[in-house]
Image 1 (cartoon, helix red, strand yellow):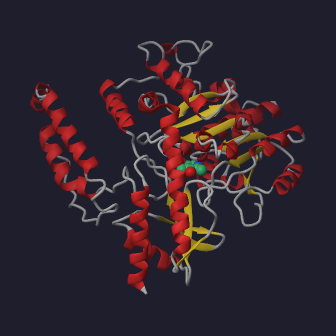
Image 2 (spheres, helix red, strand yellow):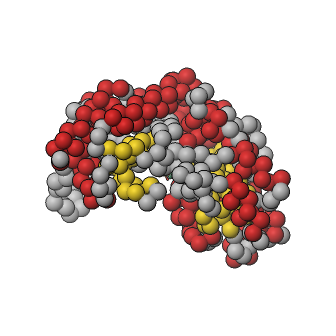
Image 3 (cartoon, helix red, strand yellow):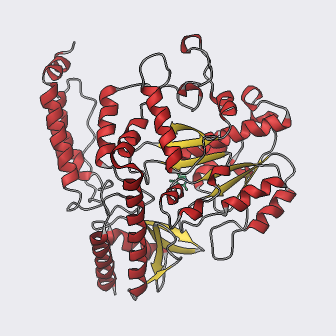
Amino acid sequence: MHPRLAADLAELPALLEATRVQATGILGRLDEQPVVPPLRLPAPEPLPEDGAGLSGALAEFTRTWAPLFSASPGPRYLGFVTGGVTPAALAGDWLTAAADQNPTSALDGAAPELERRTIGWLRDLFGLGTAHHGAFVSGATMSNTVGLAIAREWLGDRAGVSVAEEGAAALGRVTVLSGSPHSSIAKGLSMLGLGRTALTPVPTVQDREAVDLAALEQALTRVDGPCVVVANAGTVNTVDFDDLRAIAALRERHDFWLHVDAAFGGFAALSPDHADLVAGLDAADSICIDLHKWLNVPYDSAVQFTRHPALQVRVFQNAAAYLGPLGETPDHVHLTPENSRRLRALAAWFTLRAYGRAGHREIVQRNIACARALGEAIKTIPGLRLLAPVRLNVVCFTLAEEPTAERLAGLAAEMAEEAFLTPTTYAGVPALRAAFSNWRTSGTDIDRITGALKDCLDGSS
Ligand SMILES: *Cc1c(COP(=O)(O)O)cnc(C)c1O
């Protein structure tokens, strides 16, 4: 063993303790540090020939890199849709690395079963029936892609070909209809050989991001050939929801695969006041839900559900003599693009075990209340204008006068020490989004954000 490794092994408990102190320091600073720190990057260094040992690496990370990281796990990082990490999820993630399980096959240990049972809990959390099977993937993009891959196989089945065996060309042109799809749908279609132009936009309801049902039905009538409908349960700009029940009912008259991108909107199921937004979710053929957003587990984690596990196995099976037969309950290696992967279920298991449905419901409800409070505050700030009603956890707003992309970028940059907001364009108007999905965010943060917005506007006028 290299002497540096041997020394670290000998000192392992003390070194992990020092690492814990560093982690606690990062978390302890979240409230005071700039949400987005000024970037003063260190000069690149060549690959070290002689290492510094863990304590040397830790000292350098603490000095050089840690101060340049954003407060992304903190309560006022409101860009994109970004969750933090609950205490139990963090512990689960640390132990994931410590135990370093590969839940790929059932040949060693209980890790694959822990993953299966966690999927079962998640299915309950989102109100899905037992017909849905699930798998852990790295994020919603991968979850959408896996769902579309199973869709592709199902469409092949209808046409009498196996895409898994013969390739996407055997299927011919596929039409993917969607009102306000997330950008990851096009990326998934590109990866799957279906092509980005398979995505065919369907008009939305006026002044909304929800798909217009009559327009969808017209589009379905026009489609001649294999068809997927991607329904959106929570759009990123205004968190609008397609009518899932009505879309599912269209299958009585039209033949299509229904995929629902419920990356963060799926969590509406936890709030009795909002669960109706995702009524009908269970009827989908495949469903994408992100976990590193509103479940508040660390990156990278999402779940993918489908009612068609046999087709999923046909797409992703990794037959090899040493992996054992497929059997009744196929190993995870046969369900997702990865073969080996970390036991990402453990962080989700920890947070669900520690806080249960009620704990996670409280996070969702508090985040929704925060979004609503910020929305109300913005209505009272003269220089700002709400661009859409606050339907769930995102506030989409712009400048009352001259809302150019440059001016909004300027406002976001000025705000960045206090709160991180990301730019968008909604209904042709440049805007900013504040997305609430962090378990730490409270009313105090809304006051700070509102104060900062007023200060920035006062400063610039
Ligand atoms: C975030 C998001 C995605 C992509 O998620 P990643 O985890 O970044 O891959 C897809 N769809 C929707 C609606 C999202 O909000």
